[in-house]
Image (cartoon, rainbow over all chains, first blue to last red):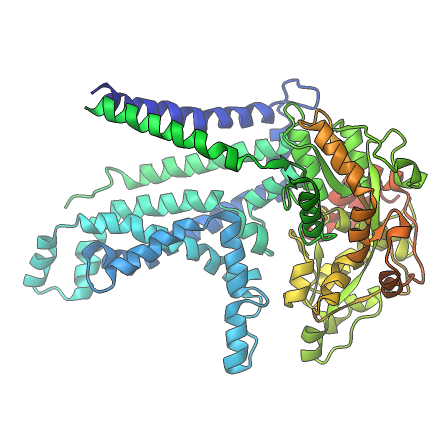
Length: 272
Length: 352
């Protein structure tokens, strides 16, 4: 019927408006000076400031590193969810529940768990009398753990989709030929999943770049670029600088996505 | 078949939607920066709603600078009717053109140095910025309650202290301005104050982007620099916290209201502002351990608990407003980015 055919078009128009219009506005503000005239000063300032540039590079490196690690760490969970088996349903539900927390709510959760008086340090103090985990959220390992907390469940769900599509006969064939489980994983499963691993790592990377709720509440040693944008916008009302930084962050993300696609070569599902 | 089902669904949604609208149409008066745990806005909001049925937006855009940024971004289509903020940021707001004048009932009784002559902003209370300490946290470490600003720089309190971020919080930016005068600096040289703020950070002191009084109560920080009212109110409710007024000197944060230019609901805002200077609201402020701008509203018991500081350093609001942005920038560059203090201060005209 007319409605079912029009739905994808309507959705496309909606997404175009919901995403492209605000993005265009951000771009527009980044090119305006105080009196409304065209200027490239904001970009010059942002790209010329060594502190901001190093913050951008550190943020990109941190998000890339944690995303790749999270993707690999998510493999066991993805395997269990994708292949089914004991507890797969609960594991999947746990990963899906993770989507309920976003931004600041997730940052608060991290502080509640591993902040100065978080549940983990309190339990450690009660059980062992030590204070090793007190305030761990505010260190770099703590930040990594916090990022893993939302990266691994989401990566697990994405990878699980690819695991589901794995042909079980290939794995049986490997076992018949005498491969041990480790060899099967290394020589059959991982090459088959190569495309999915890359695209999952990329998705996780893009999500991490934009997530700043955790960083705002918890990051101390590492200057996360999104938090700097927030500070420019809400602390100093420097809309030109903040929007220029936002455009640069988005452009970096897009470039990273293109580079990853180039590295990946062909499609998402690698063939033998 | 599909089209008919769709039309039935749309009709049902419209019917249900129109039925629920009266129930959801409570009276809402949007205002920025009314934090529940700062100056007990939770109680103020509840009292106003009980009296008039109008609900003000608690915990929306908390932080004076945050509220100002939001108002600047929305000046073409105002979404808020006004804001509660520290008066140095209020002056910035007037300069940025986001405020409109209104003199509430009782405006004349406010001292001249705590209000804008045209009514763009007016003080409703003040609170001295003091040292708060959680006695449980300190007791577990066998530490005494710090008594002076210099104590917070000592290694025994390393990693235990916190305060709000001057970039977002008006109280913190007032303190960042005032500590300079406490440490012996003057309007032409902010080096002493900046040295103290840097030493605070070097000793593990955290500058946090959230309302911090609840964190002191929970023990997340052992020592907190905040308005005395935010510490004494939880203390009166049984929390293990104490407030200390250091003898080197304290400064007060002056807070008040402004109406947004082009506010969507000017009459409702005017009624609310009139109420804020009235007996009931000023009484709640006094009972919450803040010093209301109408001193007669402060209960005797609270006045006794607050006491008078040994040395209250008055601040020049106009000068504070003029330098606060440069001060915030210098703070970020020196404390957060380890910049060279003398060159940064010179560049921002805060020292020669």
